[in-house]
Image 1 (cartoon, rainbow, N blue to C red):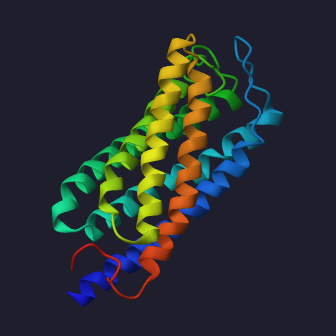
Image 2 (cartoon, rainbow, N blue to C red):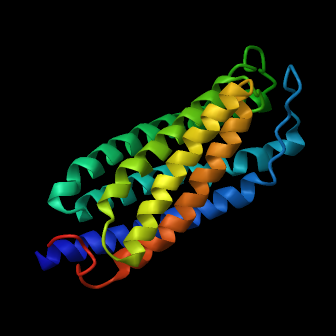
Image 3 (cartoon, one colour):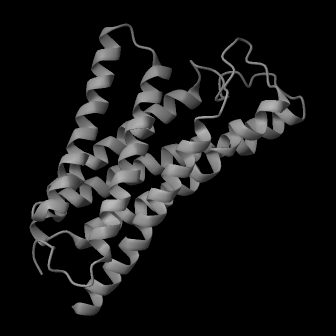
Length: 226
């Protein structure tokens, strides 16, 4: 059993560190991206490198997020595994949506743009504020917030766990609250996308650090049950 705990802590620790680092890197690069929001969404080569650069760490972040969520599921006490399993399911849904969304930009939009084959791309490009990319991304990060909500009950004992619990609950409340408020105010998907990304990436950074501390402990004493 000690060997099992050791593996859970080892995998969880490195996944948490990687998650926090990739979220911080994605956030840092995305701040300097300059999407063009004017129809027919011209593609200026000078902007391509920075606009697509943030997608790389954001893409790798998704598997790391799934692994750290799986680690939380393995760490969870038996009576709380129903919640962590649901959280892991939503994490997988989020990762699949976002990875597919990002990959299309690399595999379809970017090479087509560089080749001058831009006909019919306006619906799929990240530059279109009413396009599929923004809509799928917003949905993906909403699913991530839902995953956070279901992971929250796993953490119940100690200051560190309580911090994780309320961080996850607060992120879901803020994301859903933003969705409701923006819907009532005349829904603008780009604004919700920005809010959802800001919330989720911030949570991934902070939770990654906290989970790193939790999993970095050599024993399972902070765990709810053995």
